[in-house]
Length: 139
Image 1 (cartoon, rainbow, N blue to C red):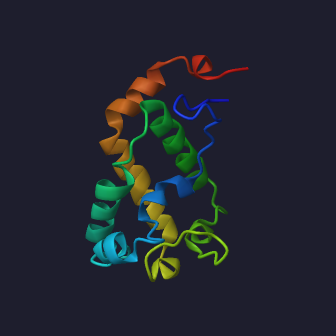
Image 2: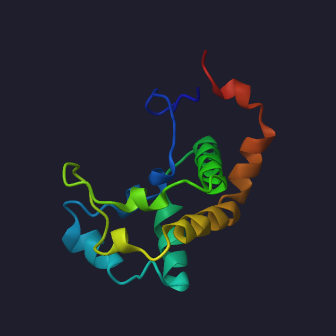
Image 3: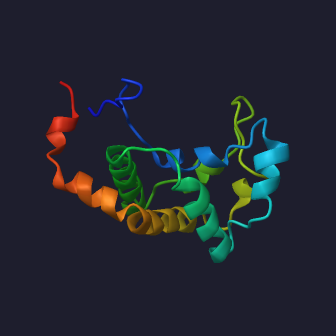
């Protein structure tokens, strides 16, 4: 299992990791208002959201690779429920911008993340792909 060197905890990403940057809980007047300018159902707005927010996070090239691969696996699973990732849980201290839980096609949103991540992260993905991934794991 890959251990995140920063936290020394196992790094087991899910596609929801791409959404953390959109969490407006306790930031409704700042990030929330900023994100309200964009419509995730509009392809041009979606590209800005993904490139300017979702793919800009501080991740190592190995984390990017594992995250990219976990999204790839989810997209290959025709039954993967991307809508569930957008559902608001009133018992959690997190929330996405208003209306995101009613996104027209959440799968398209994540397909765009995958496509853009492949472009934006291309060098990091190639670097990780070239490594012996068995050296990333502690037994």
